[in-house]
Length: 312
Image (tube, rainbow, N blue to C red; front, side):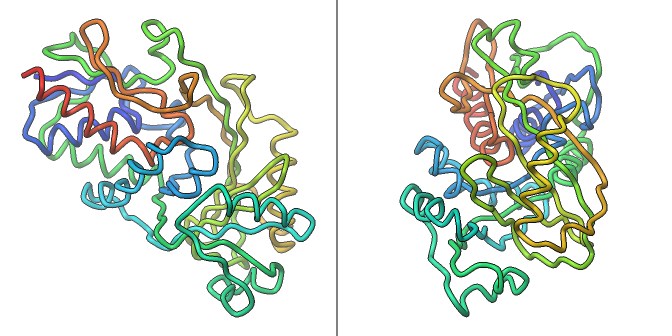
């Protein structure tokens, strides 16, 4: 028996990888099923290793390229529509900078922008990352949990750990990993039935870059701030204003959108912002996902399962 502590995206992907390999396991999380208590509930779900390469370490790009296939094999619906990156005319130097710092893209101009007709008249140029994808986080988490339950995996709010322990508790693991810090992120969900976008769009801005992820039926997730202070708690007014202003700048039709939901949480990160799976003091830790939860959790799940099998 293997015990996994934590039932968020790190715990569920690790459990899924181990169950696939035929291991007997249990998942223990005092908060129960995925919900607003976990930072993965508020994620964008973008599987965008090349875009993240603007600031992320090379291993994020390399390992993140396997994420879409992993999620699809796990039963999640993976939307393989790529990512579009744009900038307002006044910020076009940001687009040039982003292009220099990333790879895996082509530059679209003129008729090339027709893949998003709504934006073709507003932007002269864009970067298109065709190999990127996205999932709907809450649906993907539900698929993993249902798949594990179908395999007979037991979920407990409290239970005595049995066998090897894999600690996937996120910020709750600071009792053993004091170098973890929380990086606050905030998001907004809108319904804008007159807006049609087929893929995630990133609007570059020197102060508050925005990404918009289509969820279907005219629903869009807007995110996300990245604040080193503040921790958990309600969404802040300044963040909401910045996100909504950026959405309006992307297209004025967002002014008529209905605001469905606000969300905020703190994402666990190490000092170098690189997620990792490692053995320490008698247990395996999977942590530090930072802003790469859905992108990097499959690679960490594979690494954690390999560590389990190495010590068997």
